[in-house]
Structure formats: structure tokens, C-alpha cells
Image 1 (cartoon, rainbow, N blue to C red):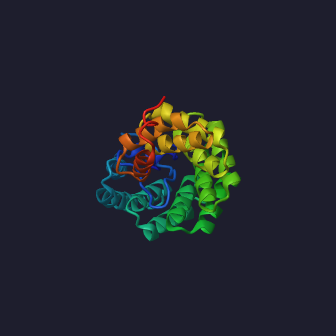
Image 2 (image 1 turned 120 degrees about the vertical axis):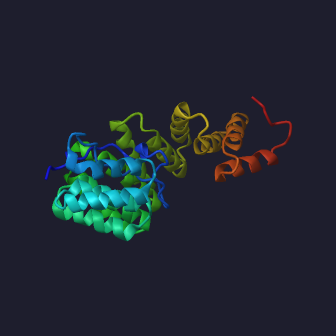
Image 3 (image 1 turned 60 degrees about the vertical axis):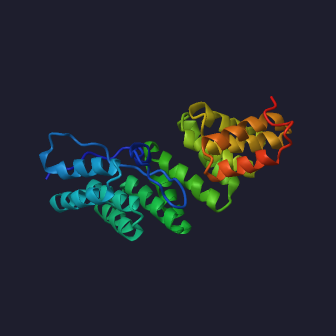
Length: 267
């Protein structure tokens, strides 16, 4: 049996066309790297990953189960299977898969982070925090970014706003182009009533995606809190137009409807 090369820090959420939508948060999981196309005994593994990237989780699970049968001692295959179960929100089987990967390789930091994501999605914050902390305490620097982002999400869920801001800031210190970290830090800074800092974060998000409804709506809130209501209207209008059926879009529309007609569209 040939062993799959080690996993990297690329994010499954950034690879899956449909996105990995977790119910309680948008955590960052770590996916297995692609493997050498000449490794013939891992065809099922490669094809399973490709199907998972396309959002075909059931087909991916079928192939990854076959890959596991052929490669029972490879933790990368089991980790990939866990990601497929996580995609389907089959949390017990995801946990079982990540546990199996860690039994095969105790220092498999990607599987440990992914298990923490699963616990976080289940609402088991204590076990999620334990896994994320273990990654941050023991993993090489290259393996900690995702766990730190996820620990920031966990701190936000616990309303530990200062801890969450610190974690997202550390993520951004290593990756200044991490749009998701800017958005999450902006939301945390709003809670801390750091409106100028939050506005900077939301504007950074809008630089990459001008139609982001969360960033537009919350940028407007920052401007209102800073007594810049006229400018806030522009961002409320963008939020209402970009995603009218979203929660933020509906709130923006209600805000605009309550505004005096003379102030709408003011510059």
C-alpha cells in the first residue's frame, strides 16, 4: 500500500463549489491535499475528493469507503471520509472517522481541527475548545491558522469578545487577505463598540466583495453609531439591493422605509 502524502492547510470551504455550510457557524476545516495521479491504488480516494468538492457527498462517501477498505492504515483517507460525513451533517459518523484518523496518527493536526469543527457544529463547545487548543499548543505554525480562526468563532459563541478579537487579529497577522477573518472580527468589534475598527474591517471585506450584505449592513450600523447617517444610507441601500431576502437585507429595507423621504439618497 502506498501512503497518501501529508495533508496541507488548504480549506475545504474554499474548495467546495457549494461551500461547506455548517449550521452554527462557518468554520474552517482542513482538507487532504491532492495525491500523485500515478498512484493507481488511490483512485477511489482522489475521485472521492473530487466528488466532495462538487458537493456530491453521498457519492464521495461510497468511494472513500472503498478507499478505506483498500488503505485501512492511512489516516488521510479516514480524515477525508470524516469531512464527507461532516458535509452531510452526520456528526456521529464524522466524529467516529476523525477519532479513527487520530488513532492511526496521534499528531494528525488536520483531523483534530476537523473534529473540533464537528463538535462546534454540534454545540459541544467544551470539546471543540479542547481540540482547537490542542492544535494551537502542539501543531507546527503552518497547522494552526484554521484552528485559531475556529477558536475565534467559538469565543464569539461564548460572548468572549476580547478573546475572539485577539484570535481573528492573529489570523490576519499571518494572512492579511483573509476576508472571512475581517468579517468576523468586524462583528466582534461591533460587540465591543469599537465602531471605527469594525468599519475598517467591513470596508476591507467590501473591497473584495462590494455586494457582501453582512458587510454593507454592518458598515451602515458603524456609520450610524459614528453620527454619519447620510453615508450610512448608501450602505443600507446596497444591503437591501444585494440580498433583499437575507436577514440583513430585510433589516436594511425596514430601516430605509422608516427614513424620512428627504434623507433617502443623500450623499
